[in-house]
Image (cartoon, rainbow, N blue to C red; front, side, top):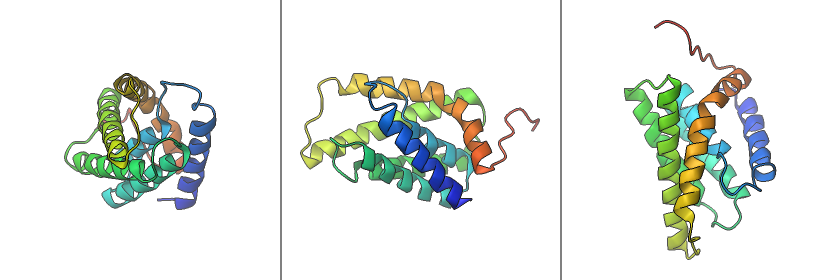
Length: 162
């Protein structure tokens, strides 16, 4: 793993998520897409580490939710996705989209549940927002894997024969 490139990528995506996509009520969660990317293309230890770090970055930019909620939810479901990837090789774009969608639903639901336990009031339309973010993340996510793999210098031969 090239950790300097990882830090630069997380910083860039965090700033992009906080500035350009913050005005959208429903849009893709780029940080969650990166969690799935590292779970698919790195070994298990690196995937778990990156999941917790990306969750911490998500906690820094999302203000109404208490600190630590995304760190826990991204860490738990990133770890689960990394272990699932050890058993099932998820390299096709439709399967990656389904995995991102499922991870986004589960991580979002857990983060909202933890925020509710922390005493934060949950919005009335949270399931609409959660479903919309998950759908957009599942659609956009696999298309962002190749530029991320290029930046991280990870070999991601999507069209190679196996």
